[in-house]
Every structure is written in C-alpha cells, then in structure tokens.
Length: 151
Image 1 (cartoon, rainbow, N blue to C red):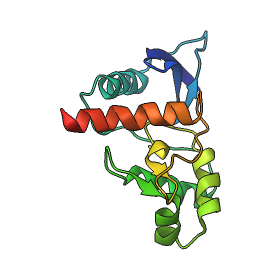
Image 2: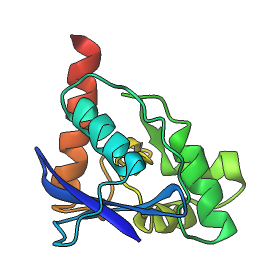
Image 3: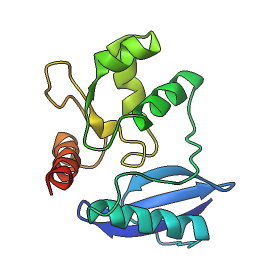
Image 4: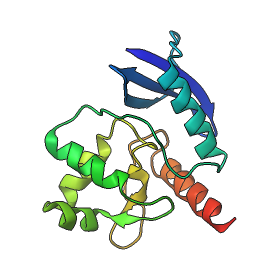
C-alpha cells in the first residue's frame, strides 16, 4: 500500500492508496513515503481544501467497510460543502437508526475527503468525531467551510 504524508493546519495526515484508489486518511506521519500520481493529486486537493480553494474532491475512493457503512459514506459524500445534515436525516434517508449512522461515521476510514464532519446531532450540536482532537477538529473543519462560503 502506497502512502504519502502532508502537513495541514490540523497537523500531519497520511493518505493511503491501494489498487488505484484512496483507501484511508489517518492522523500522523509515516516514514515510508510513496508519492504516486494519485497520492500527489490527493495531497494537492487536500492542500487546496485547507487553503479554501476547493469545495470538493475528485479522487477515486475505495473505503474498506461493510455494505451498510459504504452506503452511509456515500450519503456523507453527497452532503454539500459547508452544509450539515443530522444523524437522523441520514437515518431517514437510509432507512436506519441514528446510532447506526453514528457508528458508521465513526468508522469512516477517509475523513475530510468523505465529509463525516458535516453530520451533526439533530439539535445542531456537534456530536462526536473520531479524528485527531475529536469535536475540536470537527468544529475546525465546519468553521473552515463556513468561512469559505462567506468570503
């Protein structure tokens, strides 16, 4: 599996590729770097995202997960940049329960690119976030997108 790390406003992240698709984004840096064309493209798009230059990603994704998790991650990917949907909204859309949606969100192997940070509690509060500093990281990503829409 090829991997490439990059420094972001949230610290180091590592993007992994397998068989021509992005399969994970992890917090931290790896020593063995393999800058494939796809990983370089992912790096550039992530840098653009953090700089406010892109509102979406155009990358082949193949997150490892159950069929249900993959359906949830596909629904997350349909949430527009800067928008928020509740766990209950996604549960209704997918014929499931909010807790199951939250569980799939927490197992999202490609955060940021699959925007699980855009899923919040029904009352508008953040809910959880499995990445880096938890809800503080989620708030940072939501604020970044909101700021970009206002400029």
